[in-house]
Amino acid sequence: MDKKKFITDSLKESSETKLEMQKECQDDILKVVDIITSSFRDGKKLLLCGNGGSAADCQHIATELVIRLSHDIKRPALPAIALTTDTSNLTAGGNDIGFENVFARSVEGIGNSGDVLLAISTSGNSINVIKAVITAKSKGMKTVAFLGGTGGKLKSEVDKSVIIPSANTQRIQEGHITAAHIICELVERELYGEGD
Image (cartoon, rainbow, N blue to C red; front, top):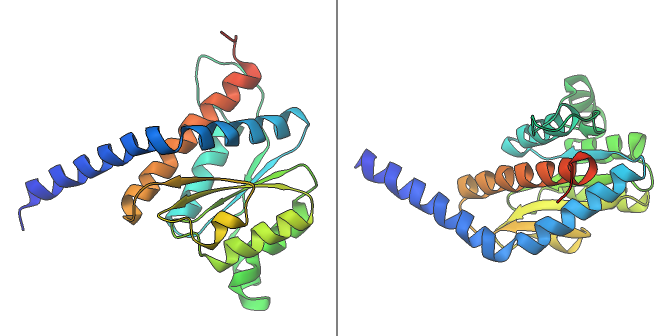
């Protein structure tokens, strides 16, 4: 295996995916910004769920919103909660009600009408994420998703999705966090920036 070629090919593929995102995802990213910004303006919160690397992304995104992303903006914390962090909740749920229900149960308990659920799934077919979206909709929440490839089953379940134009899980995850950083920065600038 030519390791240097592998590195070059990976970086090239990652760059090409970002350029495809510029063409295919801009309008969807802007719509997600509008949905989240509107919810925060109304005093509502953002919940996030996903598995594996997507679970880590949930924590990352929630932290950017609670703490801050842009250091030139002085602002209060924004209400964002990653449903992927409470090991007691996740393990009790997995043991007692089935892992497919753990996120839906948390949405049922702390989600309210007007809140937003950000569901992250590279395939768009994660059962526990789909169930969380269905529960969120039943509570009058807005639902948005970060997906990849064709968007899977979640594409038709959510109000708006950002679908990374790649079939490679690594590139999809990289696209998700890139989109997330853009969204978080635009949200905080929309709410607390000086404006243009």
